[in-house]
Image (tube, rainbow, N blue to C red; front, side, top):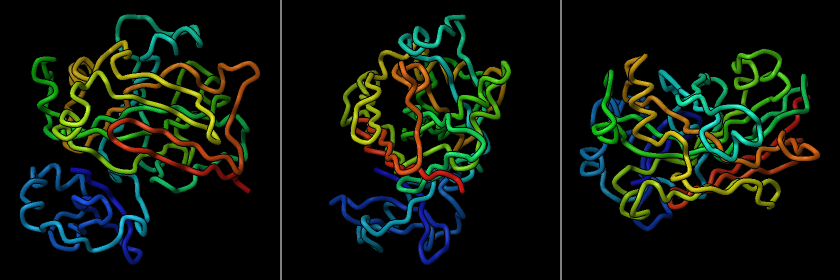
Amino acid sequence: MRWLSFLRDGKPSFGYITRDGEGVVDVGCRVDYPSLRHAIAGDALLDMVARCGDEADLALRDVIYAPTITNPRKILCVGLNYKAHQEETGRGGEGVPTVFVRFAAAQVGHQQPMIRPKESNTLDYEGEIAMIIGKGGRRIAQADALDHVVGFGIYNDGSVREYQRQTSQFTPGKNFTATGGFGPWMMTIDQVRDEAGDLDSLELTTRLNGEVMQHATSGLMVHGFSELIEFCSTFIELEPGDVIVTGTPGGVGSARKPPVFMDDGDVVEIEVKPIGKLTNPVVGES
């Protein structure tokens, strides 16, 4: 199943895509759960599919997308998690994941504009795989970690490099308003396994104005999905709907010679097979 959050008649809702891939079942208008995060926390996804059926309430082409999880309690982002990205930045390799946080207010949905702030022209793309927690827990063992995952999505961890690198702390450069693309939907872990065969074979490609800038598979991550859950749950209890953004491959714009940053009028696409494609136009802040 592919679950998404969206606006309908100006009101937030959520639902899933029909089997023919052309429509959306609006679950939010039928149940008491106010968001996809709450439905995940209630372990209600399968029950809602059985209850709501496969008749579309609106066409997928007409959807106004919101970030897949609009209100996660935590967005934990992993830096320097591909060897090629470590090499191009000259950082990483400490043997443990580099973790920083992003705030939900800095997210935008599929097809919504990412904003290059007026303070800096160094907005960079970072194509990433997002892992959504379905069952909470603390000190989760690697052997049990994937039992806590409800699904996977796509993330563009847009980074204002000038502000990211002013100090050793990443937070400002990672949290400018409307710089984090998240969408178009969450594919459940069972469907990802069915279509990919192996969670290490998820194929990530970033394109800027149609040109391939990044390409890698999830098997190239330094710290894999299970290890990230084990590590993050050591210092904080993970909760349903939390998002772990698992790191970007090599090829970021700031490491290119000359650097390539996103600007007004650009279009950035992050494709993760078999999940889908996240597309965002870039708009310069006036």
